[in-house]
Amino acid sequence: MSCTIGFKDRLQHWFARVQELTIVNQQLAAELARAEADRDSLQDDVAEAQDDLAAARTALRNMMRDQNRDST
Image (tube, rainbow, N blue to C red; front, side):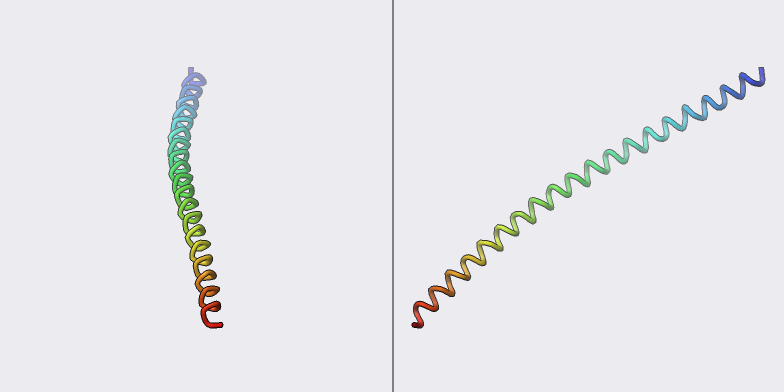
């Protein structure tokens, strides 16, 4: 009988541990999803900033070219 009680205690312990790990796993999965969403948003911001920078460089080149034509 004591062997059965020990087995039940171990079984309850492992069942509780599985529940605990399942909860932690769900929390980590949610955290990962938030981090991925943040990453995607930041990548969009970087792409937009790169486009703005390219446009500003082009505008500056054109302005310098026009200024050089006017001064010659």
